[in-house]
Image (cartoon, rainbow, N blue to C red; front, side, top):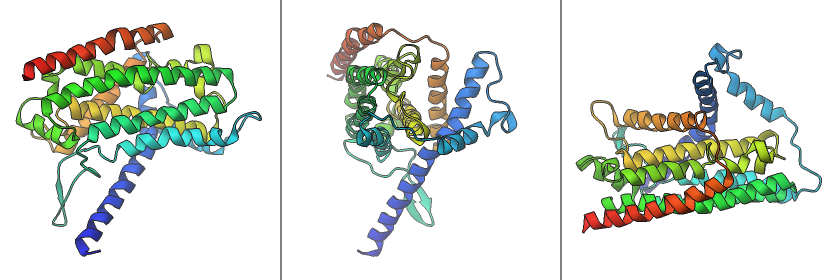
Length: 329
């Protein structure tokens, strides 16, 4: 290999290490922030004892999970039981291979892109790979040999199928407007004109609602409904295997926030401030929104969940595509 090829390969490896490290570390601040948001919304303090304002509570939780006993039920399918958390986690990490967080920057005289790969089918890749994660939930519930876990996994599969359709159709509207499946092209197209939220307000609303269901956040967390399923698909999990499911949920929430910014709010574009700062501000606003929704709205019944997905969001997403096509003629 020549020198340029070696440098490019080294940069890709460095990017993968940095992104993976950040994603693994995300639950530490996000769990603390979510508990504080919950506390302030409900007029209480939230974590307060471990460290200043409880800032070390996630570290204490991590240490506890690392040293807790890893229990595997006697009648569980042990191989699938161990594999399920990994299957749930890995696809979400893989989606960040094509997620852009900024434009090119110059490091030691060399231009470096703030993404691993600019795929010409980036949004299609993300939707396809992220959908694989549901197999982890299904296998986790099935392998546990528990009826509550099994019911939770069945709910997950039905929920994912129902809302992935609406989510994909909401993204199609953006693809039609920008005429590209590349996430970098979608951001660059919004620099020249206005943000896609102005052209796709209905598509954005559909995306947000379907996104909440896709990442199993209240009011659509029916797959882990502790009121009826005793925690759902991960009820038999403990220790670090349980933490992998929670890590996947938080990373999925970040992914949905990043895609919302890229598809509808101009990505890293913005005045005065550096592009990466704008990107972090926008993504943080969406993460806070997901947390606010969790502690504001009650959980739907399962029949209501299916009704919203099939009878409301899916027809509206098709109408949005039709209207978009009419305006582009």
